[in-house]
Length: 112
Length: 114
Figure (cartoon, rainbow over the protein chains, first blue to last red):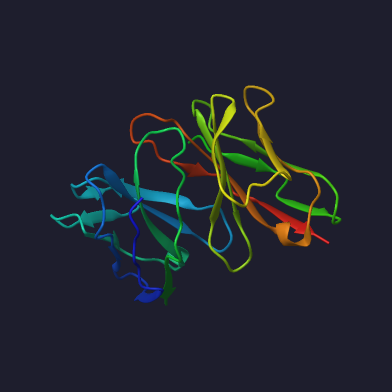
């Protein structure tokens, strides 16, 4: 799986948009970009994923650049409960093994 | 919404004892995983399981570890003789193997080895 690079930490004001960047310059054509978050020591929570088109769901939006070498996760109106570590992971879909490889992620602190 | 469940939420054991951590994956999922996270460190892959056999395992998953799907719903991780360094959060995950194929995680079991 391609490696990803994320800033170790970011701050965001409550109610503002949080934009979390991720670089994945060695991504392959069949690899998806997945975002998870981990609040304190809870289980990682799936947020969103995409292949090449921008995606939006009830939690977030995912913007993938045209060359697919980077992406941005957008939390449109961050709340204090969005304080967490956010992980960007690239992987192919399907296959027998296909584990997730977690890096250090970005620790997002939402401040009042 | 279906979710992965894990029991117990916290297990305390003495070094050298056997522990079994239990998981109930989402019902139509076919691929199952265990991960662990030592306090303050990254989430690490341990093992993946499909069609009643291990499909991949990491270096961490040595002979002290085993996994089993004893019935149609449970997926277990057994540590035969626990060490102090096995103290960690253990997360179970599952995925369908089709479509968007997202892995969903359980809330974790905190294992404390004394």
